Length: 536
Image: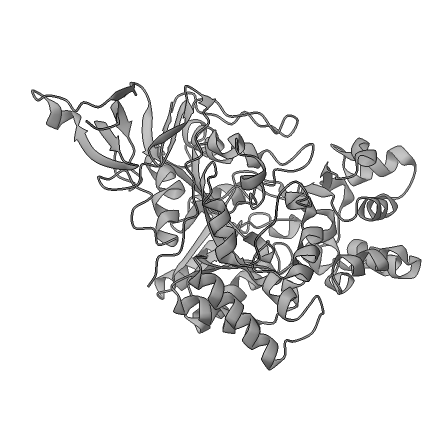
C-alpha cells in the first residue's frame, strides 16, 4: 500500500491550466497517481497508509526560489523555516557572482570576508569543501529544502586573477574557463555574476562572453546581477541580452527591477526590450521579489576602484582621510558604479544588520537618522560603520516603484526569487515572506495575477529554466515536492518592523514526499538534497 493519499485537494498543477479537484497519491518520494473527482465517481477511491484531508486547500508543486542567499544557512540552520514555511522546496544559491565554491584557501578567506553581510563569516560552519562537487556532496548529507548551485563568476575571477581591476591574461582566462567547466561537470546549473560587486565587475564583456560559451556548451544558463539597476539600467539589460546572444547562452536576469527615481514608470521599456529579444528567438527568463525596497551590503555601494585588492584594500582606503573623501565624492556627488550610477540618498539607506554587537543601535535607522542622532554628517556615520563592522553591515535601499514591480511580475518570462538575506537583526521581509506575499497580496487582494498564473510563475517556469524534467508540476511520476495552502488566508506575516514572522495559511509542505511542515509546524525531516545539472 502506498504511503500517503492527499484527499479532496484543489489541484493547481503549475501548468497554468484551471484547477481541478483530486486525490493525489504519494509513494517513494514521487506522485504515483492522481484521481480526479469526476473519475472517482462511483469507484473505490485510492487508499494509503496515511490520509491527509485537503478539503479547502490548494495543492501545488513546491515553490522554487530562483534567487536565494542560503549558501551557508542550509548547513547552519537545519530548521530553515524561513523558506520551508513559505512552501519553498528548492532554492538556487551561488548568486550574484560570490559564493564558497570553487575556492582555494586564499580565495575562501577573501570571499568569507566579502560576503559576511550575506551569510555571516561562516565560523559556525565547517567549510570542509573546496570544489563545487564537494559543496554539493555536503548538501547531500541532508538539508531542509533542495538546492541548485550556480558557479560564481566573481569567485572564479578571484581565484584566477585576484581582486585587481584589469583585464585577464590569456592564461588567466583559460583557467577561468576550466573552473567554470569543472563546476558545471560537477553539477552546477549555470553561472552567476555580480557586476556591481568586486571582483566580478572588473570583467569586460569579452571575458564574460567566453565564460558564457562554456556555460552554453554544458546546457546551463547565465544569471547576471548586471551593471546597473539605476542610471543606465536599460543599457545594462541590453548589454546582457546582446552578450548572451553572441555566446548562444540562455539568460536569466537576477532580481529584475527598475529602481531609483530615474526609472520610475519605466518597466514597460524593459519589458519591450525583452519581448523583442524573445520574439527573435532568445531564451530569457527573469526573477523578481514582490517588494519595492532592495537589500545588499553597505560596502556594495562603494565605487569599484575602492574595492580593488579585496576587503583589506577597501578598509585601507577608508582609513586614509584623503582617499575616503574621494569615496564620499563618488557616492554623494558623482554617483558610484556600486550605487548604480545614482548619487546616494542617505535617507533611503536603512541599516538592517551589523556583525559587531557594539553597533546594534544603528539597526532599524536610516544612515541619515543615525547620523543626525550623533550630530554628524551621513558619510561620517557610514564610514564608521564600514570600518568598525569590517564591511559586514547590511542595508535596505528604499528606491523601488510599485508600478514597476507589478508590471514585471506579469511578464511571460517572470519567475519568483526572494533574494533573501537571512542574517542581521532586521533583514528584508522578503526572506520570510516572498511566496505567500505573491499569493496573498498580489493574487487574492490585488488580482495582479490569477492563482493559476502565479503558481506557474513560481513552479513550472523556474523548473523549466533549471531543466528539471520531473519537478515543477503536479504530474504522475514527478517528484513529490508539494505545498498545500489555503487560498483565502495565505499571507506573509513578515513586515519591515517584524521581518522574521512566519506566514499564515500554509499548513503542509512536502519535500521528497515527506512532510517537512505538518499542521503548520516544522517536523524534523531533512529530505532536501543537491539538485544537479541535467546532462545535455
